[in-house]
Image (cartoon, rainbow, N blue to C red; front, side, top):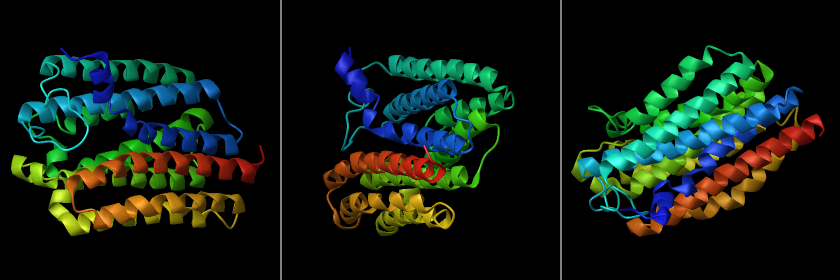
Length: 293
């Protein structure tokens, strides 16, 4: 029976910055439009965090029962390691999804954005379908698309819309940026797992691109995310503060290109998560300073 510490480890807390980052950016975009609503922002954060935890448990369960994690390098998996019964991990995933839907319903009621109920349902279905079901799209190389769309565009723009009732150019730029960094994090994870994923028939985008091009795509995604803020700089000069994240990108980028041992890529996951968090904080700061706190 898994211990509390193992359940916490199985939730993969290092991935949670990917859930918080779009909420910070989306809220900052709403603030710039003088529409900041603290309660809505908190509810959006709870939804994002619970969906992320749910995805992590669902991935643990689905990969575990398929044997994908039998020879894993990296954080412990509950099912793959035998620490927890598969059904218990599945129930944990559904529990997280259920709570996310509950908080999401409250957010929809407060914002009166009823069409977002369909978006929320789509988020949960996509979260489970990543590695679950008969034809998981994560095994087809589409996981990166899911991360970009749902942990980039949907999370950021949804946060802005539920507060301001509209979206803005900064919200769109920020959504693309944080989505690219979240996709880069997944790419780093999948590059590390190329040998075991190939053996298990899991054709992630990293497997399809091949080791070299997958590593290069990581660097490209970080670069595009950071440089996108230049679009906003002419009218919002303070957005250039986002460029301060560049030094933090250098080490993980170097490790991705030069780190040949699978274990050498493990630190890149945490570093990329922190980059996403720093990016979102600096993005929000740039918008706040340009608008005037």
